[in-house]
Image 1 (cartoon, rainbow, N blue to C red):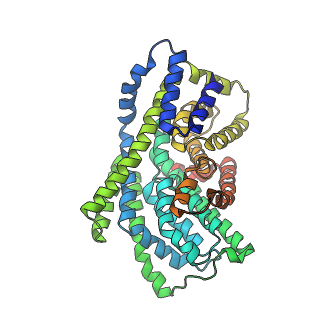
Image 2: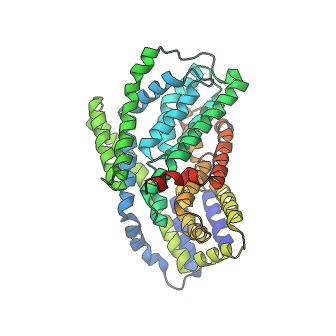
Image 3: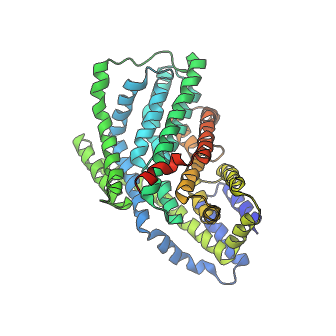
Length: 428
Protein backbone atom coordinates (compact mmCIF):
# COMPACT_ATOMS: atom_id res chain seq x y z
CA UNK A 1 0.00 0.00 0.00
CA UNK A 2 2.86 2.36 0.87
CA UNK A 3 4.68 1.91 -2.44
CA UNK A 4 1.39 2.14 -4.35
CA UNK A 5 0.55 5.46 -2.71
CA UNK A 6 3.99 6.92 -3.44
CA UNK A 7 3.98 5.74 -7.06
CA UNK A 8 0.47 7.14 -7.55
CA UNK A 9 1.54 10.54 -6.19
CA UNK A 10 4.60 10.63 -8.46
CA UNK A 11 2.47 9.60 -11.45
CA UNK A 12 -0.04 12.38 -10.78
CA UNK A 13 2.76 14.94 -10.56
CA UNK A 14 4.37 13.55 -13.72
CA UNK A 15 1.10 14.33 -15.49
CA UNK A 16 1.67 18.02 -14.58
CA UNK A 17 -1.26 18.01 -12.15
CA UNK A 18 -0.80 20.83 -9.59
CA UNK A 19 0.73 19.65 -6.32
CA UNK A 20 -2.30 20.49 -4.16
CA UNK A 21 -4.65 18.71 -6.57
CA UNK A 22 -2.36 15.66 -6.71
CA UNK A 23 -2.30 15.41 -2.91
CA UNK A 24 -6.09 15.80 -2.69
CA UNK A 25 -6.77 13.26 -5.44
CA UNK A 26 -4.44 10.75 -3.80
CA UNK A 27 -6.28 11.24 -0.50
CA UNK A 28 -9.64 10.65 -2.18
CA UNK A 29 -8.35 7.54 -3.97
CA UNK A 30 -6.91 6.04 -0.78
CA UNK A 31 -10.13 6.79 1.06
CA UNK A 32 -12.26 5.27 -1.70
CA UNK A 33 -10.34 1.99 -1.88
CA UNK A 34 -9.16 1.39 1.69
CA UNK A 35 -11.37 3.33 4.16
CA UNK A 36 -14.37 1.77 5.87
CA UNK A 37 -16.15 5.14 6.12
CA UNK A 38 -16.46 7.99 3.56
CA UNK A 39 -13.50 10.07 4.77
CA UNK A 40 -14.18 12.70 2.11
CA UNK A 41 -16.94 14.06 4.34
CA UNK A 42 -14.26 15.28 6.73
CA UNK A 43 -12.66 17.49 4.07
CA UNK A 44 -14.51 20.63 5.17
CA UNK A 45 -13.59 20.19 8.83
CA UNK A 46 -9.96 19.51 7.92
CA UNK A 47 -9.85 22.60 5.70
CA UNK A 48 -11.12 24.72 8.58
CA UNK A 49 -8.93 23.28 11.34
CA UNK A 50 -5.76 23.33 9.22
CA UNK A 51 -6.38 26.98 8.29
CA UNK A 52 -7.44 28.06 11.77
CA UNK A 53 -3.98 27.72 13.31
CA UNK A 54 -2.97 31.10 14.77
CA UNK A 55 0.68 30.59 13.86
CA UNK A 56 -0.19 30.12 10.18
CA UNK A 57 -1.60 33.65 10.07
CA UNK A 58 2.01 34.80 9.97
CA UNK A 59 2.50 33.24 6.51
CA UNK A 60 0.58 35.85 4.48
CA UNK A 61 2.03 38.60 6.67
CA UNK A 62 5.62 37.57 5.91
CA UNK A 63 4.76 37.24 2.22
CA UNK A 64 3.23 40.74 2.26
CA UNK A 65 6.35 42.09 3.98
CA UNK A 66 8.51 40.74 1.17
CA UNK A 67 6.17 42.19 -1.46
CA UNK A 68 6.33 45.62 0.17
CA UNK A 69 10.11 45.63 0.37
CA UNK A 70 10.39 44.56 -3.26
CA UNK A 71 7.91 47.11 -4.62
CA UNK A 72 9.26 49.98 -2.51
CA UNK A 73 12.65 49.72 -4.22
CA UNK A 74 14.46 48.93 -0.97
CA UNK A 75 15.71 45.62 -2.34
CA UNK A 76 17.31 47.35 -5.32
CA UNK A 77 19.03 49.94 -3.11
CA UNK A 78 20.21 47.18 -0.77
CA UNK A 79 21.75 45.30 -3.70
CA UNK A 80 23.49 48.43 -4.94
CA UNK A 81 25.03 49.05 -1.53
CA UNK A 82 26.30 45.48 -1.23
CA UNK A 83 27.71 45.66 -4.76
CA UNK A 84 29.83 48.66 -3.77
CA UNK A 85 31.31 46.77 -0.83
CA UNK A 86 31.83 43.31 -2.38
CA UNK A 87 32.49 43.80 -6.09
CA UNK A 88 36.27 44.01 -5.55
CA UNK A 89 36.39 40.30 -4.65
CA UNK A 90 37.16 37.71 -7.37
CA UNK A 91 33.65 36.95 -8.55
CA UNK A 92 32.48 40.53 -8.18
CA UNK A 93 28.72 40.89 -8.16
CA UNK A 94 28.16 37.18 -7.60
CA UNK A 95 29.17 37.79 -3.99
CA UNK A 96 26.61 40.59 -3.91
CA UNK A 97 23.98 38.13 -5.15
CA UNK A 98 24.60 35.82 -2.21
CA UNK A 99 24.93 38.61 0.38
CA UNK A 100 21.74 40.28 -0.89
CA UNK A 101 19.90 36.95 -0.70
CA UNK A 102 21.11 36.47 2.88
CA UNK A 103 20.04 39.97 3.89
CA UNK A 104 16.68 39.79 2.12
CA UNK A 105 16.14 36.35 3.67
CA UNK A 106 16.23 38.08 7.04
CA UNK A 107 13.02 39.89 6.08
CA UNK A 108 11.02 37.72 3.67
CA UNK A 109 10.93 34.15 5.02
CA UNK A 110 10.55 32.65 1.54
CA UNK A 111 13.19 31.11 -0.73
CA UNK A 112 11.19 31.71 -3.89
CA UNK A 113 10.57 35.36 -2.98
CA UNK A 114 14.27 35.83 -2.15
CA UNK A 115 15.45 34.33 -5.45
CA UNK A 116 12.87 36.29 -7.43
CA UNK A 117 13.57 39.61 -5.73
CA UNK A 118 17.36 39.54 -5.92
CA UNK A 119 17.28 37.91 -9.36
CA UNK A 120 15.12 40.70 -10.75
CA UNK A 121 17.71 43.27 -9.65
CA UNK A 122 20.87 41.28 -10.40
CA UNK A 123 20.30 39.50 -13.72
CA UNK A 124 20.73 42.57 -15.96
CA UNK A 125 24.27 42.89 -14.58
CA UNK A 126 25.43 39.42 -15.69
CA UNK A 127 25.93 40.17 -19.37
CA UNK A 128 26.76 43.83 -18.81
CA UNK A 129 29.89 42.92 -16.85
CA UNK A 130 30.69 39.68 -18.72
CA UNK A 131 30.19 37.16 -15.92
CA UNK A 132 30.02 33.42 -16.50
CA UNK A 133 26.26 33.21 -16.88
CA UNK A 134 25.85 29.70 -15.50
CA UNK A 135 27.68 30.44 -12.26
CA UNK A 136 25.91 33.79 -11.96
CA UNK A 137 22.52 32.06 -12.29
CA UNK A 138 23.64 29.43 -9.79
CA UNK A 139 24.42 32.06 -7.15
CA UNK A 140 20.87 33.39 -7.45
CA UNK A 141 19.19 29.97 -7.28
CA UNK A 142 21.37 28.80 -4.38
CA UNK A 143 21.35 32.16 -2.61
CA UNK A 144 17.56 32.13 -2.70
CA UNK A 145 17.50 28.97 -0.57
CA UNK A 146 18.80 31.06 2.35
CA UNK A 147 15.28 32.50 2.57
CA UNK A 148 14.03 29.53 4.60
CA UNK A 149 17.11 28.98 6.79
CA UNK A 150 17.87 32.52 7.96
CA UNK A 151 14.99 33.70 10.18
CA UNK A 152 12.22 34.57 9.79
CA UNK A 153 11.27 31.48 7.79
CA UNK A 154 7.90 30.33 6.50
CA UNK A 155 9.01 26.68 6.36
CA UNK A 156 10.21 26.82 9.98
CA UNK A 157 6.75 28.00 10.99
CA UNK A 158 5.20 25.04 9.16
CA UNK A 159 7.65 22.65 10.84
CA UNK A 160 6.85 24.21 14.23
CA UNK A 161 3.12 23.64 13.65
CA UNK A 162 3.67 20.03 12.57
CA UNK A 163 5.95 19.08 15.47
CA UNK A 164 4.83 21.49 18.21
CA UNK A 165 8.34 22.96 18.35
CA UNK A 166 9.21 26.46 19.57
CA UNK A 167 9.43 28.99 16.71
CA UNK A 168 11.89 31.27 18.59
CA UNK A 169 14.22 28.33 19.20
CA UNK A 170 14.03 27.31 15.54
CA UNK A 171 14.77 30.87 14.47
CA UNK A 172 17.80 31.05 16.79
CA UNK A 173 18.98 27.65 15.56
CA UNK A 174 18.96 28.81 11.94
CA UNK A 175 21.21 31.86 12.37
CA UNK A 176 24.63 30.17 12.62
CA UNK A 177 23.99 27.50 9.93
CA UNK A 178 22.48 30.14 7.65
CA UNK A 179 25.50 32.41 8.05
CA UNK A 180 27.90 29.51 7.46
CA UNK A 181 26.00 28.47 4.34
CA UNK A 182 26.10 31.98 2.89
CA UNK A 183 29.84 32.18 3.54
CA UNK A 184 30.41 28.75 1.98
CA UNK A 185 28.53 29.86 -1.15
CA UNK A 186 30.83 32.87 -1.37
CA UNK A 187 33.90 30.65 -0.93
CA UNK A 188 32.73 28.50 -3.85
CA UNK A 189 32.46 31.59 -6.03
CA UNK A 190 35.84 32.84 -4.83
CA UNK A 191 37.61 29.55 -5.60
CA UNK A 192 35.89 29.17 -8.98
CA UNK A 193 36.90 32.68 -10.06
CA UNK A 194 40.46 32.26 -8.82
CA UNK A 195 40.77 29.10 -10.91
CA UNK A 196 38.94 30.65 -13.87
CA UNK A 197 39.42 34.44 -13.68
CA UNK A 198 37.33 34.98 -16.83
CA UNK A 199 34.25 33.75 -14.94
CA UNK A 200 34.45 36.78 -12.65
CA UNK A 201 33.61 39.31 -15.36
CA UNK A 202 35.62 41.46 -17.69
CA UNK A 203 35.26 44.63 -15.64
CA UNK A 204 34.68 45.58 -12.01
CA UNK A 205 32.33 48.02 -10.38
CA UNK A 206 34.72 50.56 -8.85
CA UNK A 207 33.50 52.66 -5.91
CA UNK A 208 35.32 55.10 -3.68
CA UNK A 209 35.43 54.64 0.08
CA UNK A 210 33.16 57.68 0.45
CA UNK A 211 30.55 56.07 -1.83
CA UNK A 212 30.79 52.79 0.04
CA UNK A 213 30.26 54.48 3.40
CA UNK A 214 27.41 56.57 2.02
CA UNK A 215 25.70 53.44 0.71
CA UNK A 216 25.48 51.90 4.17
CA UNK A 217 22.28 53.86 4.76
CA UNK A 218 20.54 51.52 2.29
CA UNK A 219 21.40 48.50 4.45
CA UNK A 220 19.67 49.97 7.49
CA UNK A 221 16.03 49.27 6.41
CA UNK A 222 16.36 45.48 5.94
CA UNK A 223 18.45 45.19 9.09
CA UNK A 224 15.88 47.30 10.92
CA UNK A 225 13.05 45.03 9.75
CA UNK A 226 15.03 41.98 10.90
CA UNK A 227 15.63 43.51 14.34
CA UNK A 228 11.98 44.50 14.72
CA UNK A 229 10.60 41.11 13.62
CA UNK A 230 13.08 38.72 15.22
CA UNK A 231 14.02 41.00 18.11
CA UNK A 232 10.41 41.40 19.22
CA UNK A 233 10.06 37.61 19.38
CA UNK A 234 13.18 37.08 21.51
CA UNK A 235 12.38 40.03 23.74
CA UNK A 236 9.07 38.41 24.57
CA UNK A 237 7.15 41.40 23.22
CA UNK A 238 5.38 39.54 20.41
CA UNK A 239 4.55 36.09 19.10
CA UNK A 240 5.72 35.07 15.62
CA UNK A 241 2.39 36.17 14.14
CA UNK A 242 2.40 39.49 15.97
CA UNK A 243 6.04 40.05 14.96
CA UNK A 244 5.08 39.47 11.32
CA UNK A 245 2.39 42.14 11.61
CA UNK A 246 4.96 44.52 13.11
CA UNK A 247 7.16 43.80 10.12
CA UNK A 248 4.33 44.68 7.74
CA UNK A 249 3.74 47.97 9.56
CA UNK A 250 7.44 48.78 9.28
CA UNK A 251 7.37 47.81 5.59
CA UNK A 252 4.52 50.24 5.01
CA UNK A 253 6.39 52.96 6.91
CA UNK A 254 9.53 52.38 4.83
CA UNK A 255 7.52 52.49 1.60
CA UNK A 256 5.99 55.80 2.71
CA UNK A 257 9.47 57.10 3.62
CA UNK A 258 10.77 56.28 0.11
CA UNK A 259 7.65 57.89 -1.46
CA UNK A 260 6.68 54.62 -3.20
CA UNK A 261 3.55 53.93 -1.16
CA UNK A 262 0.45 54.30 -3.32
CA UNK A 263 -2.87 52.60 -3.92
CA UNK A 264 -1.51 50.93 -7.05
CA UNK A 265 1.53 49.66 -5.17
CA UNK A 266 -0.63 48.33 -2.33
CA UNK A 267 -2.96 46.65 -4.81
CA UNK A 268 -0.07 44.87 -6.52
CA UNK A 269 1.48 43.85 -3.20
CA UNK A 270 -1.81 42.51 -1.86
CA UNK A 271 -2.55 40.70 -5.12
CA UNK A 272 0.87 39.03 -5.06
CA UNK A 273 0.35 38.11 -1.41
CA UNK A 274 -3.07 36.58 -2.09
CA UNK A 275 -1.73 34.50 -4.99
CA UNK A 276 1.18 33.13 -2.96
CA UNK A 277 -0.92 32.57 0.16
CA UNK A 278 -3.65 30.84 -1.83
CA UNK A 279 -1.11 28.46 -3.37
CA UNK A 280 0.54 27.69 -0.01
CA UNK A 281 -2.68 27.22 1.94
CA UNK A 282 -4.19 24.99 -0.75
CA UNK A 283 -1.14 22.75 -0.44
CA UNK A 284 -1.45 22.84 3.36
CA UNK A 285 -5.12 21.85 3.30
CA UNK A 286 -4.58 19.09 0.72
CA UNK A 287 -1.59 17.70 2.61
CA UNK A 288 -3.49 17.72 5.90
CA UNK A 289 -6.38 15.88 4.21
CA UNK A 290 -3.96 13.29 2.82
CA UNK A 291 -2.40 12.83 6.27
CA UNK A 292 -5.88 12.38 7.76
CA UNK A 293 -6.78 9.70 5.20
CA UNK A 294 -3.44 7.93 5.69
CA UNK A 295 -4.03 7.86 9.45
CA UNK A 296 -7.62 6.68 9.02
CA UNK A 297 -6.68 3.68 6.90
CA UNK A 298 -3.66 2.83 9.07
CA UNK A 299 -1.08 3.74 6.46
CA UNK A 300 0.73 6.16 8.77
CA UNK A 301 1.06 3.47 11.46
CA UNK A 302 2.29 0.92 8.93
CA UNK A 303 4.81 3.39 7.55
CA UNK A 304 6.08 4.29 11.03
CA UNK A 305 6.33 0.63 12.00
CA UNK A 306 8.14 -0.15 8.75
CA UNK A 307 10.70 2.56 9.50
CA UNK A 308 11.20 1.39 13.08
CA UNK A 309 11.42 -2.28 12.04
CA UNK A 310 14.31 -1.52 9.73
CA UNK A 311 16.48 -2.01 12.78
CA UNK A 312 18.75 0.87 11.87
CA UNK A 313 20.89 2.62 14.46
CA UNK A 314 20.57 6.31 15.26
CA UNK A 315 23.04 7.57 12.68
CA UNK A 316 22.13 5.01 10.04
CA UNK A 317 18.54 6.23 10.35
CA UNK A 318 19.68 9.83 9.91
CA UNK A 319 21.56 8.85 6.76
CA UNK A 320 18.46 7.03 5.47
CA UNK A 321 16.32 10.12 6.14
CA UNK A 322 18.79 12.33 4.26
CA UNK A 323 18.76 9.98 1.24
CA UNK A 324 14.95 9.79 1.40
CA UNK A 325 14.51 13.57 1.36
CA UNK A 326 17.11 14.11 -1.35
CA UNK A 327 15.42 11.59 -3.65
CA UNK A 328 11.89 12.76 -2.82
CA UNK A 329 12.92 16.38 -3.24
CA UNK A 330 13.80 15.69 -6.87
CA UNK A 331 10.14 14.95 -7.60
CA UNK A 332 8.02 16.75 -5.00
CA UNK A 333 7.35 20.38 -4.12
CA UNK A 334 9.11 21.28 -0.87
CA UNK A 335 6.21 22.50 1.29
CA UNK A 336 3.99 19.52 0.47
CA UNK A 337 6.99 17.23 1.03
CA UNK A 338 7.40 18.64 4.53
CA UNK A 339 3.73 18.46 5.47
CA UNK A 340 3.29 14.86 4.28
CA UNK A 341 6.53 13.41 5.69
CA UNK A 342 7.47 15.31 8.86
CA UNK A 343 4.48 14.01 10.93
CA UNK A 344 5.65 10.45 10.15
CA UNK A 345 9.42 10.83 10.38
CA UNK A 346 9.79 13.34 13.25
CA UNK A 347 8.36 11.03 15.98
CA UNK A 348 10.75 8.26 14.90
CA UNK A 349 13.74 10.62 15.04
CA UNK A 350 12.64 11.96 18.42
CA UNK A 351 12.35 8.39 19.77
CA UNK A 352 15.95 7.80 18.63
CA UNK A 353 17.08 10.73 20.77
CA UNK A 354 17.47 13.50 18.21
CA UNK A 355 16.63 17.03 19.33
CA UNK A 356 13.58 18.31 17.45
CA UNK A 357 15.00 21.81 17.06
CA UNK A 358 18.20 20.38 15.59
CA UNK A 359 16.24 17.99 13.36
CA UNK A 360 14.14 20.94 12.17
CA UNK A 361 17.28 22.66 10.87
CA UNK A 362 18.36 19.42 9.16
CA UNK A 363 14.96 19.18 7.46
CA UNK A 364 15.18 22.82 6.34
CA UNK A 365 18.66 22.23 4.83
CA UNK A 366 17.31 19.16 3.02
CA UNK A 367 14.40 21.24 1.74
CA UNK A 368 16.92 23.84 0.55
CA UNK A 369 18.67 21.08 -1.39
CA UNK A 370 15.37 20.13 -3.01
CA UNK A 371 14.91 23.73 -4.15
CA UNK A 372 17.95 23.53 -6.46
CA UNK A 373 17.89 19.89 -7.57
CA UNK A 374 16.13 18.98 -10.83
CA UNK A 375 13.57 18.24 -12.09
CA UNK A 376 11.26 20.02 -9.57
CA UNK A 377 13.66 22.54 -7.99
CA UNK A 378 11.46 25.62 -7.64
CA UNK A 379 14.33 28.09 -7.44
CA UNK A 380 15.74 26.75 -10.70
CA UNK A 381 12.49 27.58 -12.47
CA UNK A 382 12.18 30.98 -10.75
CA UNK A 383 15.63 32.09 -11.91
CA UNK A 384 15.12 30.61 -15.38
CA UNK A 385 11.80 32.43 -15.80
CA UNK A 386 13.42 35.72 -14.77
CA UNK A 387 16.10 35.12 -17.38
CA UNK A 388 13.49 34.65 -20.16
CA UNK A 389 15.99 33.07 -22.55
CA UNK A 390 18.39 30.16 -22.82
CA UNK A 391 18.10 26.67 -21.38
CA UNK A 392 17.08 25.54 -17.90
CA UNK A 393 20.18 23.34 -17.98
CA UNK A 394 22.33 26.47 -17.57
CA UNK A 395 20.70 27.19 -14.20
CA UNK A 396 20.95 23.53 -13.14
CA UNK A 397 24.65 23.31 -13.98
CA UNK A 398 25.35 26.63 -12.28
CA UNK A 399 23.63 25.48 -9.07
CA UNK A 400 25.38 22.10 -8.79
CA UNK A 401 28.51 23.34 -6.93
CA UNK A 402 26.28 24.86 -4.26
CA UNK A 403 24.53 21.53 -3.66
CA UNK A 404 27.92 20.30 -2.41
CA UNK A 405 27.95 23.14 0.14
CA UNK A 406 24.52 22.06 1.41
CA UNK A 407 25.71 18.48 1.90
CA UNK A 408 28.80 19.76 3.68
CA UNK A 409 26.57 21.74 6.05
CA UNK A 410 24.51 18.61 6.73
CA UNK A 411 27.69 16.75 7.66
CA UNK A 412 28.80 19.58 9.95
CA UNK A 413 25.39 19.60 11.67
CA UNK A 414 25.65 15.85 12.22
CA UNK A 415 29.16 16.01 13.71
CA UNK A 416 28.71 19.35 15.49
CA UNK A 417 25.04 19.69 16.60
CA UNK A 418 26.05 22.77 18.57
CA UNK A 419 26.11 24.76 15.33
CA UNK A 420 22.31 24.71 15.53
CA UNK A 421 21.75 24.29 19.27
CA UNK A 422 24.28 26.75 20.69
CA UNK A 423 22.11 29.89 20.39
CA UNK A 424 18.83 28.23 21.53
CA UNK A 425 20.63 26.85 24.60
CA UNK A 426 22.33 30.18 25.24
CA UNK A 427 19.02 32.09 25.34
CA UNK A 428 16.88 29.37 26.95
